[in-house]
Length: 229
Image (cartoon, rainbow, N blue to C red; front, side, top):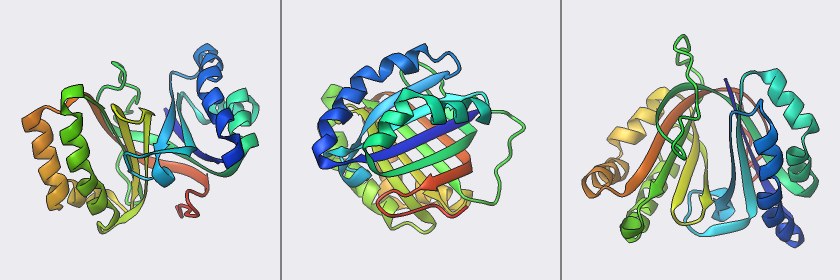
């Protein structure tokens, strides 16, 4: 399986077309039978892990059986042509699932080949949660410190906050130097480890997912940052 994520920055005057795209581009994605899972998403401020919505940054996440299917979609689909036409900056990364636990919209989107092995190279992580309405205030109060700790953690490369809506469905994409850096941040960074404990104790989420990936390819930049493989 190939997981493709594109994050695009729209020109300020073309933001209305970003909103239009979030509506009309659902149909071609739904009709594409080779795409097994897809999400059109907004982003946090400056495409970062921030609860304030950013109307310039938008993302499309898709999954494919192989690179050939993705390349055809990337070069020929109205979805990518729409994103590319309005873009002043774009970042695309292709991923291979290594582990995936949990559900996204009641589905397991990332099919893991059990023969895949964690390499010594960079690791990408996607976490996603559907937040309960009565836990939203607690979540917003605590999640910022975990995000701040991530940006200063050893081995951190870059991150982006995304979601189907700006309040209740939150996804975080991040890249790390190696698997050990991910592990150290998740379990040895006080703020993140404490938020995990609160998540379990207070039952913030009605649905959650955690997945790790090796990186197949990437191009473009996110807030001026590229990924050296």
